[in-house]
Length: 71
Image (cartoon, rainbow, N blue to C red; front, top):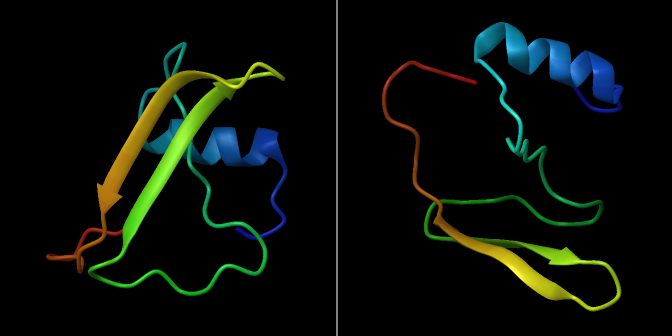
């Protein structure tokens, strides 16, 4: 779905699951970032404006997908 508009992305995601106020959709890596592989760690965070006040920090361990589900 590369280059997809935000309304199209929201329609696609909301067809699969219920979106609620405050939900966050992580859409992928920034331009120039390499492949994500099992064993990598992804760190994301939310900051407020120029103060950079921390709202949330999330850390994910990347693992191989098991089973046939794909989203």
